Image 1 (cartoon, one colour):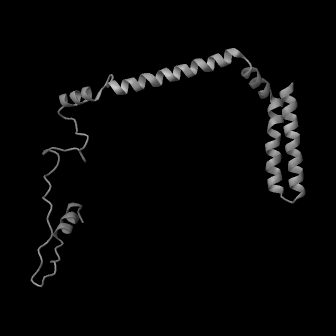
Image 2 (cartoon, rainbow, N blue to C red):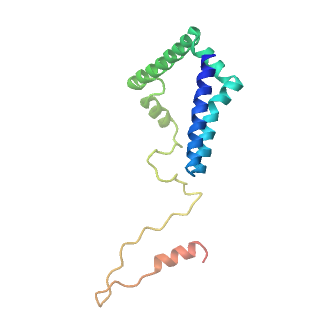
Image 3 (cartoon, one colour):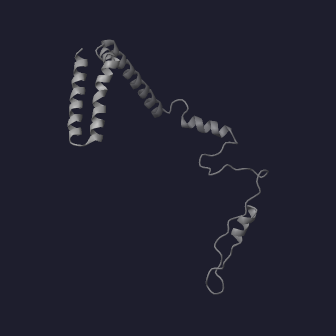
Length: 153
């Protein structure tokens, strides 16, 4: 009952502020204030406030929150201890399992190797072209031509 009275007073005060704001020709702000001020009385009318007040003042509810908090603390503690020890699935065990699989790709590999049967060997990358007789670099577009031929252009 007290919560209903408080919410009604808050809504009335908010509507009064909205009326003053509308009097000052700030209708958009007044509408927004009125919308916010109607929320508490709407919550009372739907019964949400009574439900929340019933939950807040029950000791068993607070005990339940305490049990949930204890559960979270225990989970975080076990994870921290597992990380420090290396726990199940430690890095050493994962490396040993990866060594048993010869087809596994190394973590630092940029692209998986395809083997000789799937792809033709790539030509070696060319260095910079040697300067021509005049001292300026020679216009060598052979690498560009190879790329275009590779794509069928």
